[in-house]
Image 1 (cartoon, rainbow, N blue to C red):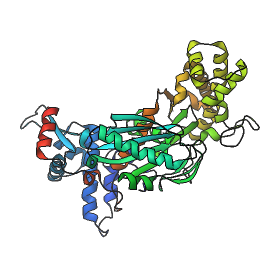
Image 2 (cartoon, helix red, strand yellow):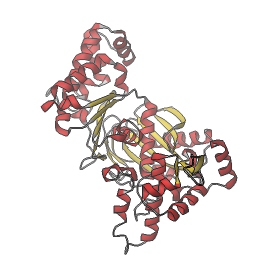
Image 3 (cartoon, rainbow, N blue to C red):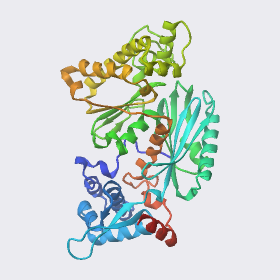
Image 4 (cartoon, helix red, strand yellow):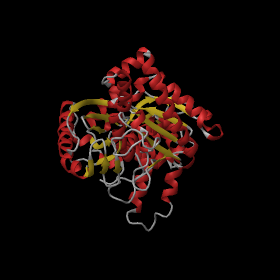
Length: 444
């Protein structure tokens, strides 16, 4: 399934006002094939996004915010209630006349699957429409240089998880996959991953056929940026960077609320910027890459050289938390080196927000305090002083939720005349009346 690279949802209209984008999109529709149906889908998508963002909300508020007529809003809301996408959850105080009934999106109206793929296994989650995890599983595996094994494991793990969670297949709207490397998100293909030793591996097509679901694929750090933009720290930011540090080093770049992918989908390979020509060899086959100096594997190697023996990652983390002076000195130097590289990126892109995540966040203040100091001091014109820096605590499950958010972003995006870009309400079957009543009673 192809996806619109850099697509935006109804909530990403110019000026940040839901509705502006939709009204602009409607211009020129007469004369297009199926324009009346598309116009209705645009209006429906607009109301769904408004309720998702602002709910619980009344019909009158929806009409005012969307600038649609009250009869149009009432007709659409009735259909979405019938399909179980909206629920009536409360009665608002009356300002005279009949008190308004409030609407909200039913997060259990549909579900999405998210998969974080690694060389040593995968993390699989099922999320509701608000990206809440309702089921999760860790699946070990040996996927380096073996994409067929990965495809088989993803299919088996997804089917098993849906069975165990007792989620009807008709309510599963799609699957998202995040993995390291250069990803052609439009084709759903991994063009190159040095960590997995993959080249030109199609993922979306085979998995869509095997799972009988739409599938979207992206670089794993991009999925984190999409998740932050959807409902995290980046939701209110126009320009921000998500920096992942741990197994590797990468960035997701959001410019004017749009994920920046580059000409070939390779934007964000920050870990493979050469910062020390002739330096340590990198797993990508070159030497002196940033990743070869500050990733978890690089730090374990450096500490092992100082101690005269191999060091595992758990030992590295334990020593960092215990304040071991040898480890602290090594982490300070590496953090400062990473911070200088980020300062250069800040000078180049001038983001308003930097979100740091990944396994490396376990290293804590000994690593990140020097990094932040280097960012503050190393940017041109003091740009680093105004940069908001948030350090998240992320695990494998959060990566998988990021992949699930790929599907949510697509589902809630504005529909187009392309059949592959259908509005979410077409993807969900109407919920039986008894089920709707039970859900309404539980909500009340």
